Length: 379
Image (cartoon, rainbow, N blue to C red; front, side, top):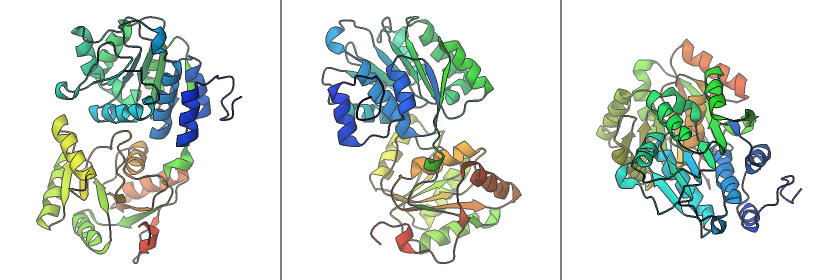
């Protein structure tokens, strides 16, 4: 066992350096299985765990100096272009210790970059399949087949078909690693079809689901009064940046228009936007050109915005995982912040009670007076 607690793994000096310098949060069970070449499906909602396992485990197993093949060695397929871009950024951050490893990105045509004989390629299944069919990317010697949020990929028929076509056209002998937010019977059965041996890893991260340093409250508001209540809270609360989650595109656009009329610096981010526009809006918000983001989609993996210190769940999502994903991905662990969930009916109240019981959360009633020091750094 080395000094980082990983049994029987002779880690590369560069990996040891990354672990030492960055204080990385890596789940030992998942990391150990992947490094040893085991096929696994890991159920977790932790972006940190997923990213670090993918980055460190593949960097540990790649030896470009001994590899003369033109084939891609590691394929990481993501549920969206946004997630693929963010994963590439994280990967490059640590791949700087491995200058011989080349990295590609297979998303929208104008955003893609595929070097000659890339070792690692990130992308969406449909775009990657297109590049494979055009013989731009070679998978004849692929060693690692990785799916992030496979449960969401499998929900979409075209994406699922793309995954299976790529899988069938790559070597039979390869490692398969999948991450899933939920692991129900249907997802589990599909996963089994892609794996030589079925190993499952469950990451117990309930303590991480409630953002450390964040105050979480609920507020009883009639449906017809929600917008008025939101505007009032935005007037009285101090904030750096705010994310407001709604459920539909119509609600997203309507609320943004209302906010702009009241001179709030708001911008929309919704599922029907073209990829280019969505990325443009995201960067405008991240760059502080806009301070309020209204969205009906979960922010992609790694898409944390450092300035966000208030999150509104304007409308309750359909399931608990969506709720946790939205709050956890919009906020930052260890930073101060304020989460406010609007409750307008019995369904909302029951949903929140069940959520608190299942994940051991504490979400209290919004007080009339909120201490600035509880949600703003340096106060």
